[in-house]
Image (cartoon, rainbow, N blue to C red; front, side):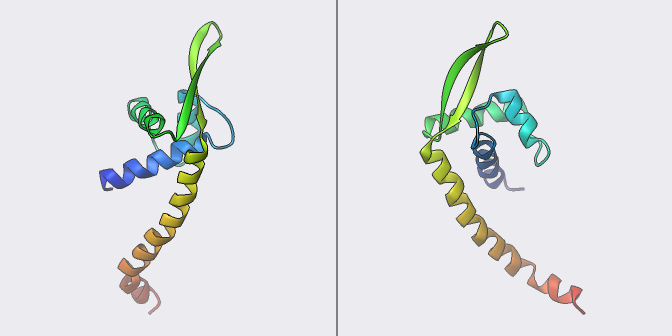
Length: 108
């Protein structure tokens, strides 16, 4: 898969993982795992990019005697998810165009 496309998809996946409640790195990975494989070395740069873009905020809280970063989606982050949904319709349309001959052959 094109690296830029995958990067964009992973960013939206991370935002979706924290859309309903604040979460932390390991939990985000667990929540996304049924849909896509993502490692810590991939996740944390994404989280930093999303924070820099004001799509999420970060707070630190103590948990079992250790500090843990919790991530919270912003209104701008929620708007990014909605924009992605609209963009996805165009991607599906392009996919349908690319595979239309294959689909036509399947119906014969």
